[in-house]
Amino acid sequence: MPLTPLKAAFILALHALSTLSSPVPKPDPLSIPPLIPTIPGITDPLASLAPPLPILKVPTPPIASPPFTASSLKPKKLGYFWTGPFNQAYADFLAVYSLDDDTFGTFITLVDVPTSGNEPHHLNVSKDRKTLVGTGLLSLLKTQDVEYFFDVSDPYSPKFRNSGRALLSSIGDEIVAKPEPEGGFFITHMGSAGGTDLGRLTEWDRAGNLIGEWPAVTDLASTKNILADQFTPHGLNANFEKNIILTSDFVVPLSTLKPTTGIIKANTLRLWDINKRSIISTITIPNGGGIQDVKFIPGNPDTAAIATAVHLGQVWIIYPFKYNPDGSQGVAELLYDLGPKAKDVTAIYTDLSADGRFLYLSLTTANHVAALDISDLNNVKRLDNPDEAQPIIGPHSLRVTPDQKHLVALGYFVQEGDIGVLNTVGDYKVHYIDILPNGALHFNRTIPFLTEFANRGGARPHFSVIADFTDPADPKWNSY
Ligand SMILES: *[C@@H]1O[C@H](CO)[C@@H](O)[C@H](O)[C@H]1NC(C)=O
Ligand SMILES: *[C@@H]1O[C@H](CO)[C@@H](O)[C@H](O)[C@H]1NC(C)=O
Image (tube, rainbow, N blue to C red; front, top):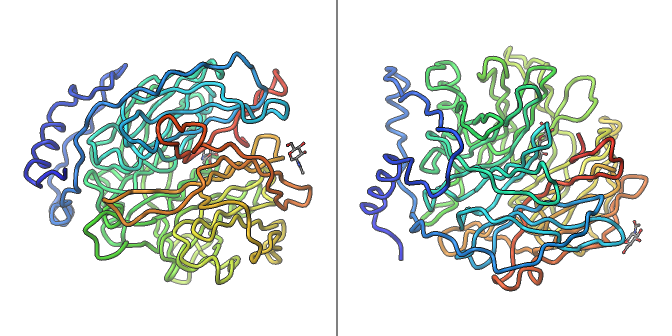
């Protein structure tokens, strides 16, 4: 039963007042940023943009996963999948599977988080390989924590460790691990605390404590920047050597929930100075219609990045150290048009081979994964046949395996259900696609989460992390 706005406001206020009421134990107290100071001309527009509340759900405690037997297998290759059950009364969970050839698709174990209905979103691993963190896209609808941290120091037996949330922002998205010795994470939050425009780039320490939400409200120049154009950061990539971050603005999350007059999409990226935690410039892809993803091309001499424009069905290239005629930093140029079938496909996510030669793109509602050879940026070669019907439905998350021999594509994007307008069809499978020597894809093995987790209505894997212990002296996680 939907809550009345008054009740919803009351629950939200109650929740905000007592962080201690969170059902999730926190190992360390949350580092709470200072209250927003009054800055004439800055906080006034912020206040006028204050969010209307979304329809909240009652934060009922989850039902634990039905009993299961963990496997005693110790595969060399493991897939971790951050997953939501179809029956959302059950806890969201991290599932672990063997990706070894001889035991492929064997269930190893799973770990529940102490909440449900988060709509599990992205997943990444810390640089010291001891922590996984998964984000919740819709945790705010149950006023629950958004970041879920798992201890993977024993990779065969991960444990839920703690959770956290930010104060100004919500809607957890892409995660980048910060380098050692500091460790920790940067995580994009696409929306404000109420799910409207004005998200933040959040920062977390290695223990899972919130360090900051950027830009800081006291950073006048950056705050003016985010007030000028929609700031709904989803895509995130960092080049720590060059001291820059790129975030890409996708959609206003609340505009995907009913009632809505249509999804509000962005055409922008932000270029950041990491040391200052401030925005250098806004980079625009005209008529881009949701810039879902941005990633630096490994080894590119110009520190170039690719960005996906969902309305246009195009890949753009971003040169962060080139200047536009108006003097602004960061030049965007069209790299490749993926053709008519790639336009308005709701989502285009990417991954690159570690050598920067191959770019893979999931065209969600086109049920297609495109492959480009980008070794020569002036002569991009398409490796897939855009007209071929591929055996995949609703692909989103992509992950090239550490050995560079497979692409893990997950057949699920987002289903908000009755409350929203974002409901893409999926096959709810982990696709373990072979990468051929020329970079092209060969669909082969799958793990079907609909039947694997039938005891809770099936399950929807949103994102993966892949570990490879083939060389015990040099364990590899993902491609870095
Ligand atoms: C995860 O973190 C690593 C290390 O910072 C980064 O290279 C990568 O782009 C991040 N995101 C994903 C999806 O792996
Ligand atoms: C396809 O999967 C089989 C195992 O089912 C594996 O032996 C084979 O090498 C895979 N094909 C390619 C092209 O990698």
